[in-house]
Image (spheres, rainbow, N blue to C red):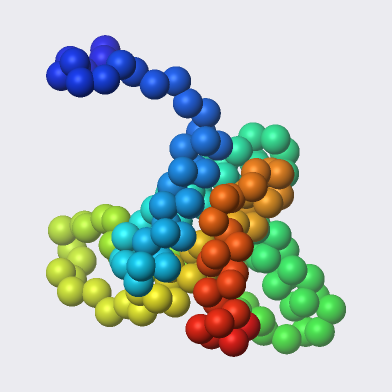
Length: 154
């Protein structure tokens, strides 16, 4: 059952990829405006949608490919990369910040300690990688990359 409408605008039919593209574009805009908290949330939403679309096409998202690379490194070197954590714990660790600012469970602390800049940067990079693997251009990706070169000397 649909929610009643206020009549301001008609329903929109839009693909999940288009939604993620708009979310990521806005996340980058917010990042460039140094509004990092909201950038994490939007980039995280986009990253999740792009990952789901990749999986639906039988492809792996960047986090899955990264975990596979870690596991291959462990096998090849015998090193305990990422503290020898299993894949599901690595995913959870990588999504801790995003989930901390999106959710609250009754047994959690009401205060979080987080580096919003770092988390926004890495979530945007993850989302950009997934978008690229889907062949989806992000209109302001170059602005993000240029900012990183100028400000972070990357």
